[in-house]
Image 1 (tube, rainbow, N blue to C red):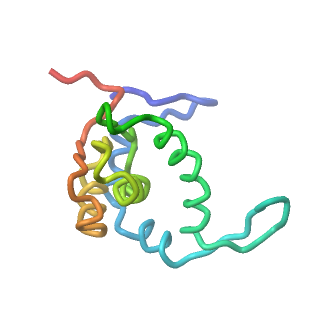
Image 2: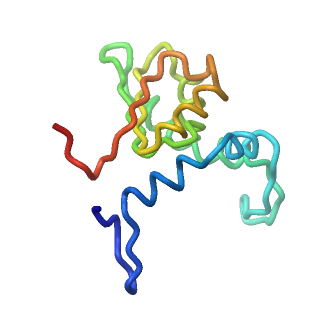
Length: 137
């Protein structure tokens, strides 16, 4: 077993993380579409839907990606630890015709759940189950 980190004697292995993620269902995606939380927005405490919070988070990424010239060179985006694929589904909607999108996650189950949940929203997005901390042959 390879340790992901150790802090005050606690060691979490890659296998521990994979086991935790393999038990996930689509609750993250459903929360994204239906739940809200209080947060600070423009200096004020507001209750915002998770979807709106994510849109604000992704706005910066959209600007950065749009600053590249995808007409001259195909844009390639890799999300490491894509898990629930919410970011990739949003990126696909925004840049589907101008970017090649890829995701990597340690959990095959999370990728399967994301594919089932987003269906066509992830069409053309290549997803891979792998660990970025382990060598492959």
